[in-house]
Amino acid sequence: MTERSEADLVADALTRIEEVAAPAAIAARAGAAALFLDVRELNEWNLFRIPGAVHCPIGALAADAAARVPRDRDVITYCNSGSRSALAADQLRAMGFTRARSLRGGVKAWMQAGGELED
Picture 1 (cartoon, helix red, strand yellow):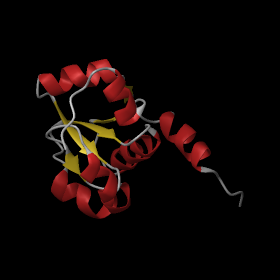
Picture 2 (cartoon, rainbow, N blue to C red; picture 1 turned 45 degrees about the vertical axis):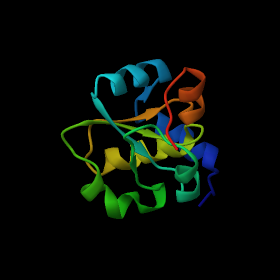
Picture 3 (tube, rainbow, N blue to C red; picture 1 turned 60 degrees about the vertical axis):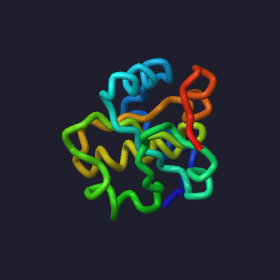
Picture 4 (cartoon, rainbow, N blue to C red; picture 1 turned 120 degrees about the vertical axis):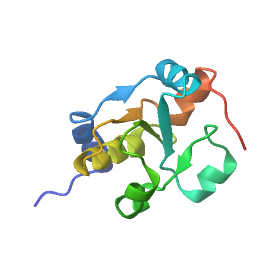
């Protein structure tokens, strides 16, 4: 079996999921249309986050998604740059969460687009 890099796994996930650009994500948050799921590690979450986001590190997603992520809402996963969030959205999709998307470019793109953050 051939070992696959993280970049390979992300590229594969991107064939199955939808990404949302930062301006559209900012609009979705303003309209309370989506739940933002931060899949970064705790030390990253503690630095700053998108206001109102739910924290669930990608490593805990399989075990905790059912309790933390409502199936009846649009979900936008995010991380620092968009790689882990793409993997997380793909994992949620495989778990039956049909309304999960990934924030293209992660929280970096969010900040560049003028998105609000909280400590």
